Length: 300
Image (tube, rainbow, N blue to C red; front, side, top):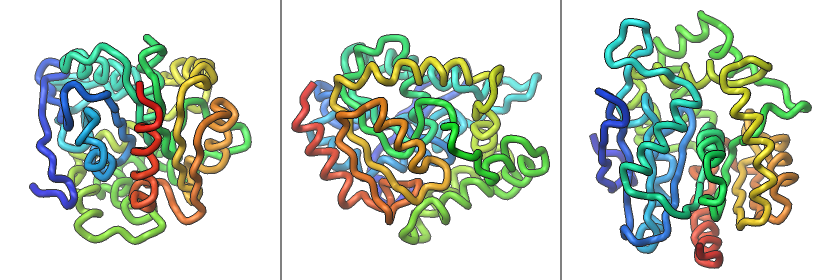
């Protein structure tokens, strides 16, 4: 299936027995590594403009998390085979397995969006010194800020069985994000690239499981990792950081941006009042050259 503006050749490896992960590995093998991590309900497609702009010089590694994009979408029912546990810890372990599979053991740049922030910063807890630069777009590395109300549209999937059924039956989350996640109206074929990979009950499983894994309370299974990430985040303040932010994001809004500004006071920040959750869709013409210049100015 061709995807617009995605002229790449996805690769695959067995990240767990019987479960294939799709990923991009574009650019020179001896180039500085940039690991780009998407969230929910997107996939590596979100990063396509940045990959195209960097891969002449940088090695761009861009996984589709299990259940997302072109990766396998296993069930998590008790008797399923293969079975996958859709948790933040699983995502972190998968990223570690991919980097080991590719022989990437040295320093790298983390580029993160949405759940990619928690996956990336959660992975970095193992060896923070490997993360030499940060590129941050509409994401989190800490629990829901106290001044921020949990959005009803997420609560529908996280806490309602009927809402969860609707999301899987009608692919509501991916379809809604493709229409409401940007300020500019995405072309029909671009919206289809974001949504088509999740059509059908089985294919939409991860879009719901990600929502159900959002940690809000002590005891939620991802909370300990999120709290550890929050404690570690100020430790990156001595490293180059670039923040590109869409202020029209109903989830990752000014409260989340404020959390990153506080933890990373020296970061280069570009915040846009006319951009939404998919900041690299609304503002790729500006953000991609700025990110390229940032990386070129701050070699590893």
